[in-house]
Length: 620
Image (tube, rainbow, N blue to C red; front, side, top):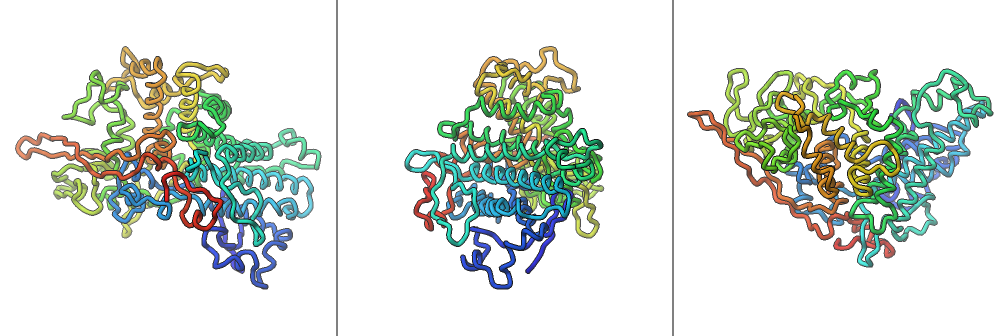
C-alpha cells in the first residue's frame, strides 16, 4: 500500500493514498467500499497506527479550496487574461454550464468531508500517545477540533459555490453528511436547506472553538495549562507537544471563529438573506467577536494593505504578520512573477487588471473620479490617485523591479538599456497586456523568473486577512444599524472601520501626502447616507481585496451584474510632441445570465444520477 508524506503547518504526516470519495477518483463502488484482500487493514489498523489515522485528517486539509495565485478575478470585471485556454476566460465568455464549471467545489469539498467524517469514527480509539493519559486526551481534543473546523470550512465553500434557489422557490444548500458513507449508504440524498447548512457550520465552528486553543503557542508554566489537562497530569512540555508552536497554521480556535464570521456574512448577503436564517446584525456581531480579540481598531495593521511588500516578514523565521489571521505555508518560488510579470521581465503577463477596476480607485482626496469636484484629469489619469493604485497595478510609465525598468504599456516603444522595444505594449505579443495594465499586487520585485538565471524568493498567500474581517464587519453593521451606530457596544462602527482603511491608504491628502483641510470629505458625505455607505464599503472591499480571488463571489452574493463589459486603456504618443493620448477601449464582453447565474449550479452528472437532488433554478 502506498504512502505519501503531507506537510501541513510544521508537521510531516504519513498518509495513505486512499483516493477520492464521490469525485471519480476510484474505479468502482466495490473498489471504494470493498478493498482487495491485501488492503483490508486500511480501517482497523488505524487504531494502532496513529500516522495512518492522522492521514485522514490531512486529506481533509488537502481538500481545502484556497487558491495560492490570482485566478478567478479574470472571470470578473476586475481583470482579463491573455491565456486563451483559461477555463475562467471561457466561462466568462459564455461556456459556464452545470457540466462545465471551473468554480465548482462539489467533488473536492465533499471528498474532504468524507475523509473527516471517517476520521471522527476512529479518533477516540487511536493510540495517539503511548503512555501519558494527558497527552492522549490533548491529542484527541486537538484533532477533533481541527476536524470540526475543517468540516465547517468545506461546507462554507460548498454553500458559496452551490447554494441557491430551486424551481420550488426554496433556498437550498447541499446534502448534509455528518457520518461517513459506505457501500450500504443511500446516496440519493436531497439538498438540505441553506439555513440548516448554516446551523451545521455554526455548530462545527463552536465545537472547534471549545476544543482548540485560540492560538497555538508554547507555554512556560503549569498555570497556563487548562484545568482538564492539568488534572490528568499534563506538564508544559507535554502541552507544548500538542498545542505548542509546532502546530501553528493548523486550524485553531481563532480560525474557526473567523470562518463562522465569513459564513455569516455570506448568509446575510442579499442573495441569501431571505431564507438563510442569519441577519446582518448576527453577522456583524460574529465579525466583531473576531476583531475584539485584537483590540478592535487598536489591532488594525497600519501596513496591512501592503503586507506582501514586507520582505523581512516573508522570511521563514520571521514573526507572524499582524494583518494575516491564517495563511498558507511559506514557499520559495517565482510562480506569481513568472505568470504575471510583463514580458520585458520574462513574465507571461497573464492577469491584466481592467480599466473598470482602475476607475474604482478614487483620487487622493477620497472622491471618486466621476465626482465633478474630484479634480480627475482624463489627460493625466494616474495623477493624484489613491496610492493603492500604484501599489496594485502596473500602468503605462510605471517604474518596476530592481532593474528599474519603465514599463510602457502604450503603443510606442520603451527604451531598455538604449534598445527600443515594444514587448510590453498593448496586444503586441501573446504574453502582452490586453488592457494596458499588468498585475503588481502580490508580486515581489526581486524575483527573476527566467529559467537560465532564475531567482526565487519567499512568498506567502493569506487565507484570511484581518482587513477582510474588518470590511465584513463594516458591511454587516452598516446594513444592520447604519454607518455610525454601535448598539452592541463593540467600540467601533462601520464608519470607523472605513475611515481607518482609507486613512491607511493615504486618502484625504494632497499630492504631497499632507492632510487636506476638509479631510476625507467624501467619506463624511457617505456617513450620512446608508445607501451611499453601502456602495463605498463595497468599493473599498473591491480595492483592498483585489486579486485575492474574492470579487467573483462578492458580485454574486450582492446580486450585482456579472456581465459588465471589460474595458482597457490605449495610450498613444505623438512622435513630434511626445504628448500622450489616453483612449478607453473595449476589451472583452462578458456572457453571463444575471437572472440566475448569481447562484452556481449543482453538477449535472449528480442531478442526473440522483433523483432527490434539486438543481438551482435556470441551470440545465
